[in-house]
Length: 240
Picture 1 (tube, rainbow, N blue to C red):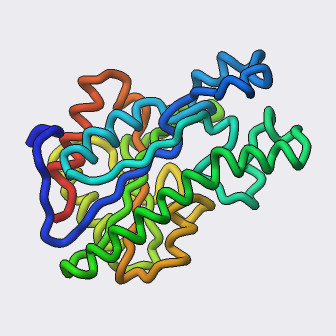
Picture 2 (cartoon, helix red, strand yellow):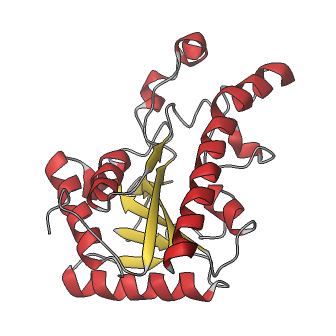
């Protein structure tokens, strides 16, 4: 199955998001990052390779994709507003009014778009007897604090939600059968950490909403060919 081909599932409807799709800084805020241009190009600035994989998967599944439009160093779309990590060292120093402007201009619209799409798809899923699956696509740096991470691909989930846990386990098994990659659940991060999907889980029943985050080692998605390959693998093994 090519990533651009149609993918259908009798069990699920899909929503894709990619919160850290870009490292762009909107023009009015570029002076804040004049000394941080090199950092913007690293994993601190964005999830390199994640957006192309998300686009290929969403296109194949004929499903909506909502992408972040700015660097996580401006305001992090995968953190709740009250989490200290929502602002970076470059924006945390701004006064309260300017931080609120960042939330109002960039953070809240993204979350609102996702919530609106979740509600729309959930109604559609309930009418058709299916379940909404929200897949958040991310990537991570291969080396953190001098430690080389062994994970190639991580599936992040909430183990207290049985259907979510079952889907992740089935997907992991199929991925391992179809590749020699190191596939982990809840590594390199916990699936219950602060973030968009974790917050949505608190609002929706585990019967109606399944949320998984896919974490891709950036070594896997360095080129367009590599991105196509990993998208193809994910689609071919995606539980149906």
